Length: 382
Image 1 (cartoon, rainbow, N blue to C red):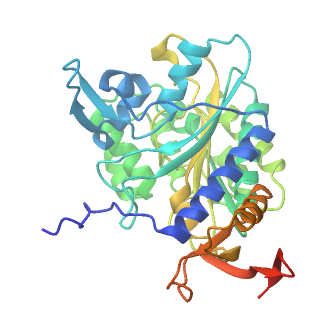
Image 2: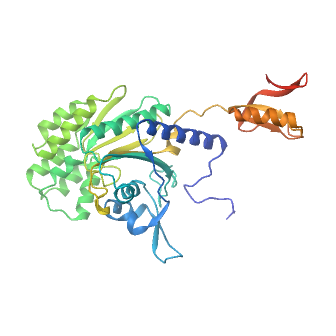
C-alpha cells in the first residue's frame, strides 16, 4: 500500500476548502457569542468510562478505543462532544443559574454516519443548561437557524419531533433493550408491518398509538391529526403543545413534523429538531432537549442544544471566490519591507513573488500589485 493512501472515509482538506471551513468556523462561533454562549474546549481523548457513561453509552459502537500508556486505562476518542460539555457544566463550572456553552472541534467515528460521510467531522455545537422552559428550546432553535443564515444556506427546512411521545406510549410496557431497539428501528423506517408484529402483545392503547405514529408526518395538520389519533396521555399532550409553540415562532423557513422520528443520539428527552437544505442528503443540524445528559455527572438539570458538522455544511455551500491579494516583488530593501508590513497590518494579504515563479497561481487572486512610483511603493489595480 502506498504511504500516501489514507484510511477509508478520511481525507486531507486542501487550501480552498480549508479556508472556507475556517472562515465558517469563525462566523459560527461569533454568532454563538452574539447570543451569549461561552466557548469551551474539551479534550479529544478521555477515559472511556467518562465518555460512555449514562447517556453517552449509545455512542459505544461509534467510539475509537485505545490504551493509555501512562495509566494503562482504556481511553476513547470522542464521537460526540455533548457528554463532555455536560461534564464541564456539572463539575468544572457548577453554576447555579443558566450556563450557555458552545464548542467546535473534531470528533471521530469508527464508521461513517452515511455512505459518503467522513469519519472525522468537525463538530460545532451550542448548549444551554439550567432552564427547563420552552424559552430555552426556542432560543437554541433560533441560534441554529441563525448559524445557517450566517453560513448562507438557502431555503432551510425545519423538521420537528418530540421524544416524549414514544416514551409516553411505552410507559406501561415492559420491554427488553433488544425489543425496544427493534420498535425504534421500525418507527424510524415507518415499517407498519414490522411494527404490528413487534407490538402484538402490547396494551391496545400503546399499540394503536405506535401504529398511528408511522403515518403522522407532514405539515402542521399532523398535530391536529395526532390529537385525534393518539391516546390523551400527559406526555403526549405536553409534547404536542410544545411542538405547536415552537412552530409558531419559526419564521421564514418551512416547517414539517415527523412524530416517529427517533434518529440521532438516544439521550433526547423532549423536543427534537432536524434542519435540512437543498443539496444535502441528510440533516445539516440536529438538536433538541436532553435534560438527563448531566445526571451521571451528579447534576440532573435541564439542557438543550444542537450540533452540526462544518465539513458537511461546507459541502452544500457555494465555494467562495479566491481571496483578493496584493502581489509584491521579492527584494531585500527596507522601504519595500516596510510597505509590505504596513499593508499586512491593515489586514491585507501580500504575496511576495519569489524569483522565477512570477506566473504561478495559488489560493490567492492577486488583483493588485505593489509597485515603485517616483521612489514610493504604491498599490495599483492589475
